[in-house]
Image: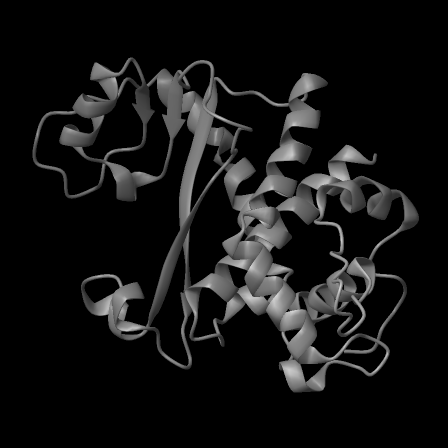
Length: 241
């Protein structure tokens, strides 16, 4: 993938920079700290192109430097912190609607397999990894529960409806065509189901980050780090508008 311009604009970097760890000075010296922006742009190049680490262009830091920073900051919760900070900024502008939550999932095959402790149960565990996305993560615990959870017919489950109802949350999901029990879904509520394009669009945006489409990293930590970066880059576009 040829570089077609800066991966981070100056405006975007000014938002990200204060949220990243500052370099530590060691009394005994050691290797100089590689600039955070250069490392992040190297990670973004891999994330957007889907290329192998060894294919990272020479204009970026060494692949091992980018990989270690990606792993370490995921383990330290840095990437999630950045994502939540941007969501909080949108929330303060009242640009987020927390009363509705949209639910969907996506499947990414793991070409190199996965560690035994990371594999989900069932047939899918033998070929890939499921990651699910919700249409929002708050900075901290939510002040109130969503009023509605909107999902497709795969989530049509009476026990699930009952559990959510006990918590004051309505599940809006069409009934499956082979359902044998009497219908419980209010047809008027299904009008809100038309808004499921919101989560489908989100999945489409995530698909633009090619490293997420197929999981080449055996470590789930690395894949999860890529996922968190993709999410905060999507939110960042809205923040700097």
